[in-house]
Image (cartoon, rainbow, N blue to C red; front, side):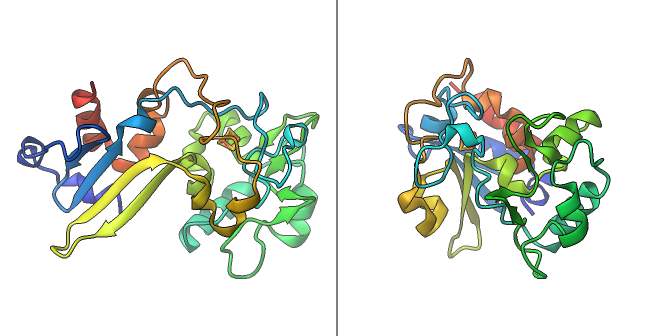
Length: 237
Ligand code: SF4
């Protein structure tokens, strides 16, 4: 839906863009969707520190477990995404996929609704644990790289989008407003209250060598569509 809204974007929409709040948001009007980009987060040098300081999302700091934000499993964005993840998972070898046997016998979802990935041994079934011979980390990510494809096409959307959060709001004039900002503890819901979450709200992960608008460019294109991203970059200052 997000990309569909920008496909027919005309240049005159771009010309009408204006700054809603120069201190925080850069706004791009794509016609039926107005995109608001949080300059503060997109201009920061946040970077994922999984395996190099990430404390995870459990109640106690647990860098040694290497779970990052995978302890709860992933919430899937509907049945199409669930089917895609299941189909791709079925192509991954037992050598690469640490929990291949569990996936074969119990499936990769938490239940028949296919709304969440299954948690095995305290974390997402797709998470290869530290020390696993074929490689630690998300096996969907590892398999995508091995296939020379983008992990965006293999992983649940919430996994490749985090720490980018999009808030959707429908205005009374039927124009959607989408605010693109950094993920916050509150975005985890009640689970967030007790997490040893350091990711975007501590200082540890602000050690990247480029601003997020650049380092997460592929992800932002996938979220907002290329025309809106190019306009964002053209006006970024
Ligand atoms: S996105 Fe944040 S919480 Fe998730 S692995 Fe990276 S640093 Fe850790």
